[in-house]
Amino acid sequence: MRNSSKTFTIAIVNVIILLLIIAVTWKDAKCEFIYEKSVRGASIGYGFAALADEPAGVYYNPAGIAYLQGSQVSTMFNSISDYGLGNSDEFPFSGDIGGYKRYDNYGSLAFNIYRMGSLSSNSAINTTNQMILTFSRILNPWWAAGLNLKYTFESNYGNRKGADIDLGLLYDANEVVNVGFTVRNLFQTKMKPLYDGAYRYLDRIALTSLTYTTQDPWEPTVFAFALGIKQQAVVDRKIAYGLGSFGVEQWFRYDMPFSWILRGSYTVTKDDDVNFRQFSAGFGLRFRNGSNFWRIDYAFQKYPYDGAVPLTGNHVISLVYGFGCLDEQY
Image (cartoon, rainbow, N blue to C red):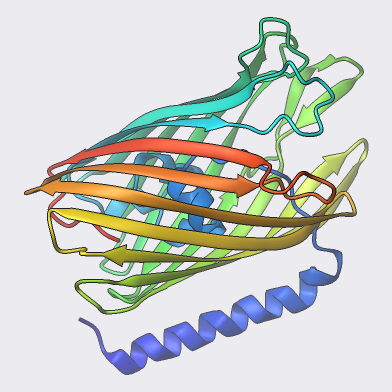
């Protein structure tokens, strides 16, 4: 374990950085309503980018899998609320399947496939598909870097497509503090060809995240913070927005073969000048046998806009299986 005074200093410096970003961006803060691809990330918010320690974590930070041992595979299903779609017959959903493998002395590779659309045969919802190839590597005992190569395309109706990349850094200060830096959709790709009178752009998002974990071998608590700036293309303009979230993850019986987890987060911002207040909560169950484990996660995300029926939102569930994971993180 590294020096405790260094840990405290790092934590204070990063809190100051986060507060400065709030001061600059909060006045006009807005964010997009992203359908989550990681259930754990959906539960504890964008601060998960400072951990990102599972196959779907590459959507938050491609550097996260660098510090993990062995391999993991995961699958996710998200039952998306149809509130506000104007078609009560729609059954929108999203899903992801992916995995990673670590190669000693080389780095870690991951591959994920994501799809968001509707289960209805006659749908008014565009179907979006995404494939991501990830490479991540430890640079030194403190830093890891990662890269996502992304290809996004539409189906069902519309045939716009485009490629982009995500970049990520992860600073593993010690067992207590983790800091993540990510840029999603670096080139803010314009998906082509023109469809229904409009192009489609991939939003560029720069995110700073921080997690602080209490040193309790039985019941550790993870506090997750994140603030970011998003650049969105609207017609012929590019507009900068901001986003922020806070989350908590509480483990129980962490060192035992059977563990359970409670999670929650809250995000307050705006989206197209509409108030965005999203509460998320979830739980997980982990079964560990030596270096292998199973983890089942569930999350509920409240519909974030005003006027929705109470407890209207998304229900997300995932299954993660890891093998050869001798040093599994929180």
